[in-house]
Image (cartoon, rainbow, N blue to C red; front, top):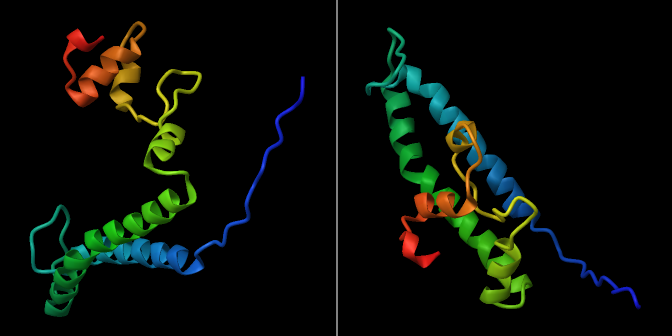
Length: 134
């Protein structure tokens, strides 16, 4: 009985993508921190509001989510490039683990329900799948 050898390949880490993530998270933090002082409505407001903060929040709100989509798209592109095709990528990401859920995150509120929960029920709830498929 021979043991399987594990082969690993050294990949080059994209440091600029990591720094872009750090920058994007900093922009989100700054955006939410300055919402106290802009002209729009928000949960908590300061008496003093500033027009330049409003200009910043308008600018940041236009670029925050697209920046995260670009970052995730580039990350997905390189992850697919490293794997052996789309099918193998999905198989690696969504294989079932010991709990039977795999890469599917389920709502936290379902864990607080009494009794045990069948994984098929959670799958039907999350993906609106008909019970006849099981």
